[in-house]
Length: 167
Image 1 (cartoon, helix red, strand yellow):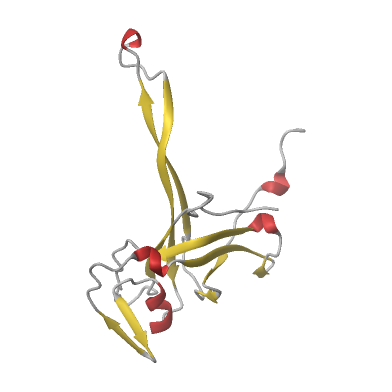
Image 2: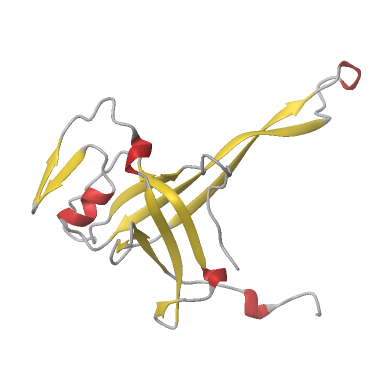
């Protein structure tokens, strides 16, 4: 069939970098979530039927299951922590601006065992920060330990753009 393209089918892992630093080996699934919130518009003559919808917001979140576990990797995803040398300290950071922690986050598809250089395979989010999240560190005798951290993406203050993919 002319309208089907089997070469566009995909599966596979990705590499995540935060502020240029690799998040290391990841578990499954790495999940990029792009949300759009809408509000219905009604008219009394139409009853409860929505006549249209308008965009009222949205957001982008990334769940990163860390398989490569170190204090450095864990610190990248926990807002209430401070890394000094090799010591990770957990503390209450009430009042901290999460956006002040924002740095560039990239998700790059892995193809043939290496990160792709094709712009169509690289999501770039200039302003991403850890959280909000509840980081759970599992201890199980027969399963690999994965620590899932979350990142949220902020839109650029001037352009309202969250990020890009493609050329």
